[in-house]
Length: 430
Image 1: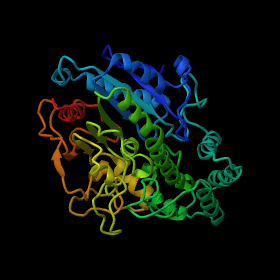
Image 2 (image 1 turned 120 degrees about the vertical axis):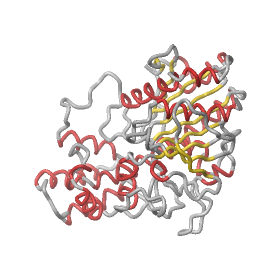
Image 3 (image 1 turned 60 degrees about the vertical axis):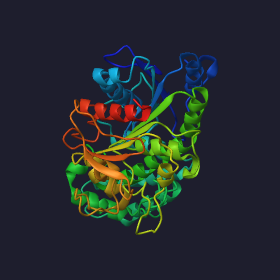
């Protein structure tokens, strides 16, 4: 299973999996190498790819979901025959998809089923959240039990009982929830956790915002804690294991061009690969292109200067390194409710979610607002799949993609694939 066929093509991709701590899982198919990443490094010594595509899914990606996403994304790219031919006859790609557990009640092993029914029971959801937040503390079970019991007994609550709010606050402390300024790392660039405010805002947004009623009512603040946990996992994976793996790829195949593609919280993974530990380390050399698709990362994370804190964004050093030789392309869409609505709610507990190009918010994701506070960032429109872009190396492009991106994960259309190929060709000097 780690080597997966790309639908509609004769190509395949490697699916490298990590646990919630950012450690690579052992792969029984890797032979003497134990880990799939080591097997990949060994095999590229013989196959010598010209281009390496390294991609990361985002939030709410369990293992089957990650595979389905990569099937669609890579399949959409390889369906672009004109773009493939433009890469030249010597083009030898290597496709790699990363999986990291980013769904609290996701299925993390192939061939088994998490739930006995299509709609999980409250008990099943509780057990999965206990596992999800587990940090070795027995108190997590007790605190979540308090929250879930009250939700079952008081499903229509219009106010949060104080003992539930207290349980939430203790839970946030146990899992290490942090908040800081807009210049802070992506897992701590939001406001302090306030379960009462989170509950009240979710109630104001209404039932349509509840995810199939799984996180409705008194359970709604779990969304913010889950959201923060995903950002923390994404940064840890990118800055550590994947930064090291990308350096190793560059060392084993120094002539290969590397292209990074991230979706949702995968944009944090990708940016953290480039920034390395603490956001201050560098790869052996810049990568050739970066595409950040509907990113769930702050619009200020890459800024040269953020007025309210008088500092640059956490990922600004990635731009100024520079860590990217070719273009950086960011897609944004008004149809993306996950980034447009959920992101500001989970990070800032704010209802400031309208797309208004004249008034930039304090809290918002690049999948809605693009990369802001960066002097060379250009706002352009996503083009039809038959039209060329005027990308240039070193350019940064906020691609208004509403016409072609109809939702947070509706990103496998030919127009998105074509934009990625245009960034790849520019970075490769084609």
